[in-house]
Length: 274
Image (cartoon, rainbow, N blue to C red; front, side, top):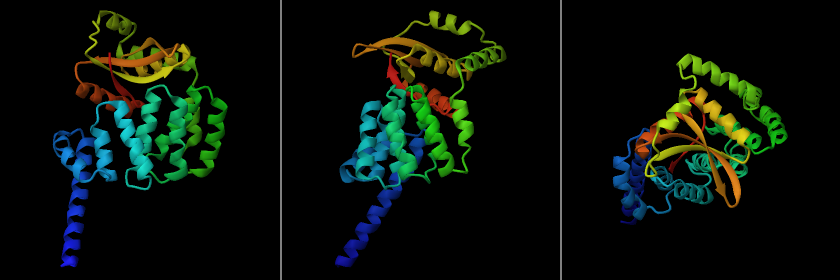
């Protein structure tokens, strides 16, 4: 009788695990209805399940709350299937929030603990870029040499050279893309004509202490065909230059553009209220 009971528990657990994995695949594909429906049940029944935590984090619209879920997932289940995904989510949140040192601290876990992760190439690039934009260029170059030895199959030299591209090159890139897409100076006119609604949404790609660094990122984003702007903010008596993309009527529309930005520029963003 005990054996039968154990078998039933095992198959029930196996079914739930497969169900959660299927829901995760749906969410990553942009289909969230089923996952939102099942999540309360899964959360009550499997509160400490690593896959359930990853699903919960994916469905959470509040970036800070989602980040805390992924931190919990990593701290309690570092060797789970989604341990590396959790590290990337946390580091991307910090990067998009302008907390580049914290982002680098999390990204450093990838080559240390998840060297075979499917995210490793993107993680190395984001790690080195986090160091560069935070003013630690020499450290980024040092780690590029370390990564070159650790990951000979990845063209680290090319990545670090692209990250070190200077301001003039970005200017040229923007001018070339402006001519190609016939944008010219219409982007400034576009933003002047847009009436900002504080109930609407934008994407935030970074927050910089130096305006020149914010301008570099704005030029890079605009060069890829997106409408980026710089917003001057004060946080804890410190002036920040925040790069934001577009104005969106819903989070769903913002998410679609965020996916395109990630695809074209390998740049993570967070959704914010205007």
